[in-house]
Length: 219
Image (tube, rainbow, N blue to C red):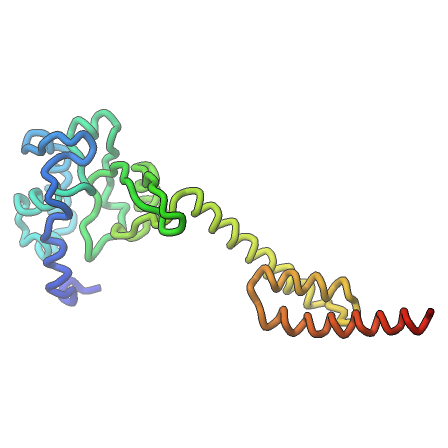
């Protein structure tokens, strides 16, 4: 995406502090020039490494960028918290950012799960993995707690496996075999293929009816 194509609205968002908070997001100590030396150096390097990006969003002004990027709850931490491990130093070279600022540091973040509505911690370690290993966009956030995420993964795995087994069974399906047709219906039910469930259920009902008729004729 061309920097010039970004709207002024996006540019204004980037130039707006994420929060009126004027404290470190971890220890809550008031931010000063002296307790932000690590992130100050990060910002100076950012200006050197991505000059066009820096010029576009912060007019090449390191003091302006320093002020904006060390406000709010996310994206930075004071020197003491970075030194103690309460926050993790970020590497913007590994992050996917363009129309949003990169992280300077990662801190634990409290979020609400979209699925179960409970609070959960999006840990600094998870964030580092998300943004620097998986290379998710820096503006993305976890929307579900770990339990719900695991449940969703399990559902997807069940769906994928059922879909695979259904395809294998259908390739050699005997439409006169009640057990095979029943198994295929069960697999399609797991994948949510309602039309196919309805279609093969009709076949199964006919098979069972014919089987019952043969049984009655033999009595």
